[in-house]
Image (tube, rainbow, N blue to C red; front, side, top):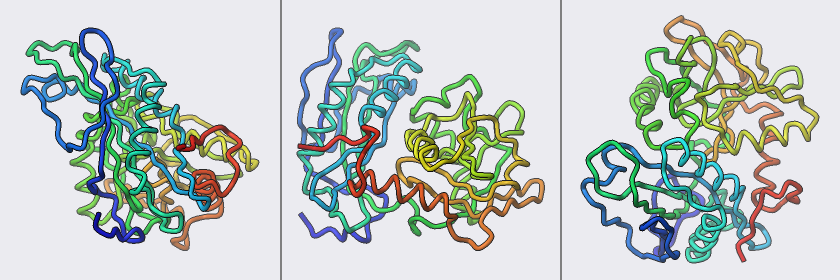
Length: 339
């Protein structure tokens, strides 16, 4: 393969050697298949193309100082995919089959796992789509599950550094009783316009308020929100926010560091009281927030006064990364080592 500049990778796609696939036909899942093709042979009437029967996950594998490859919270991702399947009536892949596929695809592409000191990782993208041909609005009878991998650098160009965000009231990411809690493509399609507008205005990303009352912080375009004040980690409780596995992990770490953890509605005006805040997810881990602008109301909530990540965000970020890379012991059972 061409020499990869590990230290300067973007968060993009690089071709790797293999992907793995399962097919669901005649009421059952088939055997795991290995493919070197980057393409899917798909019927033009497949339900994923017309009715959005599509769910995906995002995970990472890390090479440690000891040379071992570690995958973070594999089973938690498998369970979240099953929840997404329940949400849009897709066939659920058993956790053990999901695990087998992840371990196989990482092992097959082991030469693409970036070296320890590079700051890069191997991104793992499981994808499940409805493939049977039909025109009526019904769940598919056949499904294809694929996992591909690609080495990636930091999600934001500056890595772990403060970023500005903007609140938009003119857009909703998801309805309160809609599909916001599931990791499906339609939610991301719904965020593209707002995200482009935010970028055009010079912001890293957009923030959504709750769709019902426009009073409470819901989430960033592709990440959960958390704020820190009075030794407390606060994150929104909402019926339309994707349950971030990174956020779930950070809550555990925050408690272990002696912080109180609160999951509750977070009114917009409370932003002015936070000492630190961040957007968190698999891609960026933590993106510390410099400020959140409410341009419509001519307000700016400045969270980082010096433009630098705060001590709690830094400690949480370093602790999570240390577990992911094997620099600190995994006392929570979050890591799966690729044998």
